[in-house]
Image (cartoon, rainbow, N blue to C red; front, side, top):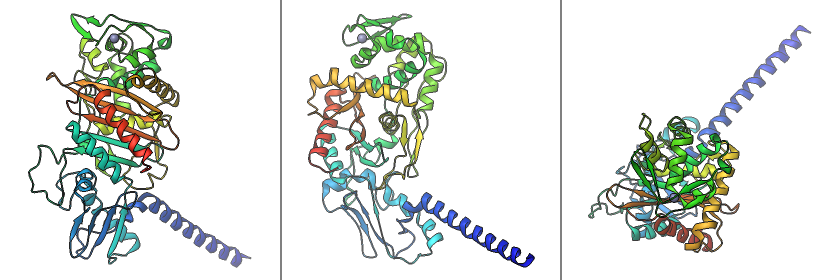
Length: 436
Ligand SMILES: [Zn+2]
């Protein structure tokens, strides 16, 4: 009997070891599997591979003979801030970034001598090319589109850009900067979405309050102004009117600096983030005591507020997805269900309604969205030089096209009439031409 039980004990032990090993392998494959698919290495002169967009369009290909890029100029330039180049001139290019993951792959599978590999990106190169063409008509800026269900980045363009095949040609200043990931801008009224969340959760009678706007509000001798007198408004109407007076009052009278700082921090506006290991820029919000007038300005997205477009994308993507942020990625297939809770579900749902109301009660009067169910917020951010950055951010409330977006056009003027028009044209193109 003793012998048998000892034997069964060893069998159990072996089974436990096998199971542990399998568990470890599956866990590691889950964590790194998608990266391992890209197993070419900068240090391996034999490496051959391709970087493809979500539809199989070649963005870069390399082998023993040559390192090449997409054949046509518009595709190369529009997608430059995604692919980067073989020498790493931009810090956020995927070509150089994914080369670094080669050792992981070798370690587990031991296929160091494999000579070919390809990586399929989530980016739609054709939509990027279209977005870049639109953006370059307006000037400098960036456009980001992400699938808020899967985390897949569909578009990322930054203007001006570079032709990686002929980089020696004369470049515009700042062409290597990826404005979508590593720039920050004054957010203007798009930041009212953050102030709104703080108010929804902390001002008990918010929805029954009314706000009077005579076109200007005096706070300790400092004037906050609106484009026009908005009269008496509810909270919902004040957001749709983008009433500076109402939001300034709400910020310094009801929310206060401590909560504003807490919400800006919790929603990730003050820290940098990573996307597939690439670093994005941290933003800014006044965290030291600044007094009522400056606090009021900060609640309407002015003051020393600075926001990275990618941080705004995370925020609106989480609002669209009932508070859950699907981890953003450039890899086709998405982030394998990895999500993080960024907002309370009820707050996210209320913001969805408010952003839909912005469009149906105001923006649709001026822009023909051709029945696309946009939920959005405009921003016209004063630069201090007499010009304004144009912002448009939000998402499509559509199961088939679950896209969150941010567009920023530097010195582009009014939010709706530059960035808003651009996003509308891009989405009409993407959805009606069936590219996504
Ligand atoms: Zn007003």
